[in-house]
Length: 145
Image 1 (cartoon, rainbow, N blue to C red):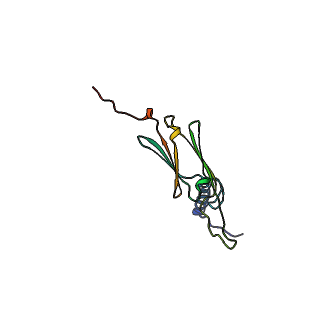
Image 2 (cartoon, rainbow, N blue to C red):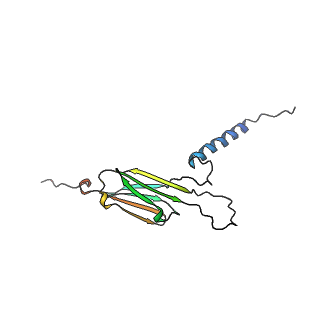
């Protein structure tokens, strides 16, 4: 029987590997690795001005006619899919880090938005949805007389 020397750092290394796996799975939606084709969530920025609310979503690699945008019961939803397309049979991928697959994001919007004037634009992989505020929602100055 061989004597194996106890190394406390080996236990820490194993723990670190397990924790890395847990964080990888949560970061990539439970897929376990970044090379899978599964659902992904585009990054979104939302900001507000005096006249409107603006939603910007990063959806590179998705054609604008592949994006479905809807508003129902004060919930703005956009859906689409980024497909993994391999051009030739000779390609041997060494690493795939970009996420592919379907996506869907939904956001509650205030009732102060004028639904009839909502507009959307898609440029350079960024979807911009402009939600104008109704006239009643805009702050106004009242002169004191």
